[in-house]
Structure formats: structure tokens, C-alpha cells
Image 1 (spheres, rainbow, N blue to C red):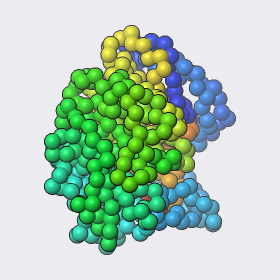
Image 2 (image 1 turned 135 degrees about the vertical axis):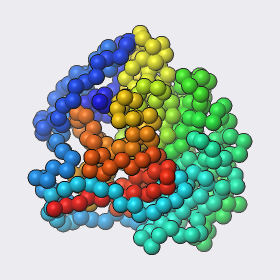
Image 3 (image 1 turned 90 degrees about the vertical axis):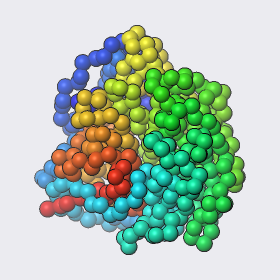
Image 4 (image 1 turned 180 degrees about the horizontal axis):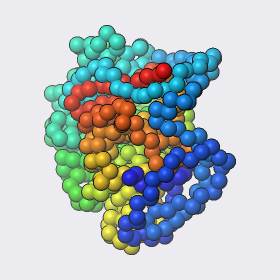
Length: 441
């Protein structure tokens, strides 16, 4: 059973936590209601949060007829909320299914390739491929396999195109160097390909271990580049980075990369380590920034008991997500009686006893038009669990919805992606790129 909180945005926990609370019994999604003030509980403490109304959504409810809005997002940017130009009544949703559209070696990220109708798919070994309905272009956009250490949790871990990419042709990657260091590098595309020799290392830090290297990089609405890094590896925050605000590890970083060849700590970063925007993360393998709701959503991989999803306003500086004081909604170090004052607790917690869960994989917010039943829902999975679950961002919710009975188990899910239209793709370690498709009666 998923442990969850009904909330919108940020929860600041006060008081102390001790022990593991009993699981919350299963309930159905709440009906439409007016905004209310609700008391939510973490480990042996409570905080009052205002929650918004939510319209219940039942997976594969064939009695529901939805109205979709039609419109088109620009091809060279992440889609904004769809502008209503006409309405089309869609047949009832019968089920969701996966459609395999491509296979590549260990895909870790997919996003629109700006200025075209293609998508860029990054593979962990160090290659960025371009894909469209005709298939994978056999000549990659970028190949840096010769400088990437592809081992376990290490490899090419993140990709982001600069704002205004069709003009600047600047792209950024996060990868593990051959010596194990974390590297943030910039490349420039020319003539449809990015020459590896055009690369400039703009930021680098050593890693004490081969795991918990984090991975995701993404531009925020402020134009800064965000980067998630884990606590340096081992177990139990062995190297003491989680609560160390002078370390870039176990943190969400924020850079100003507006000047080519440079990564400057962004103005307003609030910690002694100048790159750091938020601390207290164990291994934020994937996060997303949902511009329509102004929300940053982090899927942070847990230790032995709990996985978590945390949510906060993207402009909220200086947050502490709790690791290793807490794991999910529970004390970790110390195992009881921990002081959780000022920590940001997750909105969703998934215990390892739930469906084989072992390592959470986030996650994107659905902003497409083909499946309006999922509009505004954050979708996530798990490397071992292989399920697909969702919850609405910015609305109250009970348990996340589980779509796995319809879709089947995708296997080892390692990442999500979206295309120019905002449709969602699920990526697996086996190499499958799976499009989420609606079947209607």
C-alpha cells in the first residue's frame, strides 16, 4: 500500500518523528469537493495543509466520456498547456496500453529534439539518438562512448537542450568520466550532428563510490540548468553528504549556463556550496519541472524500506528533503525520535513490500491531448516493480492510481520521456521505448 499525503505543494514538518506508523487503509479517490483544511500525518506528528478539490479518476472507467481540447505546441520548445481552439468529444477510455516504438541500448532519457518533429533518446553508454516514425537515425546526434564510464549506475545520465536551441545549437550532458568523476559538459551541434570534439567540461566533481550518482538535468522556467546528484554512494549516507550544505552531493544543483563554456552557480542559490539549490536527497535519479503548475517533482530512491516522491514550488529555495534523517515519512538516522523540524516530506511514499518495489523511477506530468483523463497527472514507476502509477499535481488525492492491470508490467523501468505533443514514453533497461496509448470504444 502506498503511503500518501493529501496536499498541494510544500509540506514543512514540525516536531519529532519516531517509529513506523501503521499503513493507511485503502480508500477510493475523493469526489469533487470544495477546498478544505485537512490535517495530514507524518511519523508521529501532524501538520495542517489546505488541499484543493479533485475530480475522481478511475482507471479504465468505460462510462466516462471526456472532451479533449485540440491545439499544437511549437516544435522547438517544451509544450505549454494546450490552447483550446476546438473541442472534440472522445469515445470512452477502454484501456491504456504500451506500444513499442523503438529500441536502443539502455535508454535513460527522451525529449523533443528542438526545431524538428523528432525526439532525442539518450543511451547510458554515451550515445544520443534521433528518432521519428521512420525509425532511429543510424548516425547519432552525439557519440561520447569513448569518454563515458558505463558501469552499474554510472554512464551518460542526463541530457538537456538549451533554451533557444534552434539558434544556439547548445546541448548539455551529465555523464560519468572514465575516472569516475561526475561531469557536466556542453556540446555544439553543427550540420545536424554534435562533434564530440566541440565538448567543453563546464563543471566536474569527484565521486566517492560508483552508485548514487543521480542523473537528471533539466532547464527550469527561470532559464537555469538544474542537476540532481545522489549522496555519493554506499549505504546509510556513508560519506555524510545528505545534510552537508557545503557539498554538491545529495543535492539539487542550479547553474547559470547562459554564457557558452561556463557553468556559474545561479544567483540566489542559498547554501554555502554555491551550486546547491536544495539538500537532503539520497539519489534523485529522475526529477521533472512542470512549468504549467510551477512545480518541481523529485523521485528520490530510498534505502531498504521506502521510495518517495517529493513536490514543491520550483521557486522555493533552500529546501531540505530530509535524507538521512528521514527515509520517506519515517525516521532513519536516528531510527526513532528524529527531529524533522523544517524538513520537506514526500507527498507519496511507496514501501518495498508493495509490488516488488525497490528503486523508484520518475516521472513526468502528462500534458498531452490524446489521454485527457491523465491531464495534470504525474506518472511514475519502479525499476523492480515495473508498474505505472499516477496522481494529480496541484489537487488532493488519496492513493495514486495504478494502471498496471491494463498495461501489463513494463519490466525494469529506468526513465520517462515526452514528445512535442506532450505524449508520454516509458523507457526500460532492456531497451524498449514504449508509447502510452489510449484505446477507446
